[in-house]
Length: 107
Image (tube, rainbow, N blue to C red; front, side):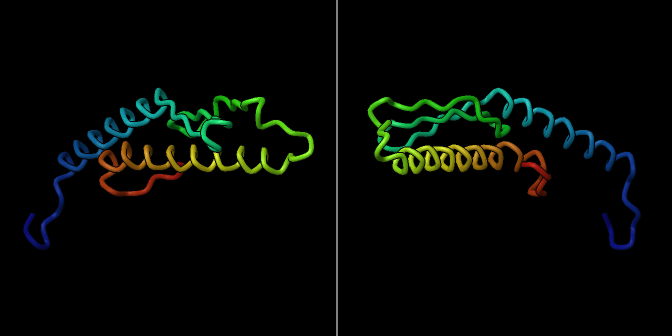
């Protein structure tokens, strides 16, 4: 486009529709994705979807000790943080190309 020229509205609409389709596709892929993260060499495992919904938490009975609840709490928290980070990275990977680098709320 030459300086001072008005943008072609039809072309802008096509670009917006393409971006909308790419975002919808990326969201569908994120909804189907499941990520697994663990802490303590697999003693605590967390499963999260690509959209950030936590699906499950598994705790190995070996780590359950009534006299040391803090260790279990730390392992659960570490697994959750790891899962959330993996979800954030996946969302950036999927949504980045669809949004052209623009940040969308919630992703």
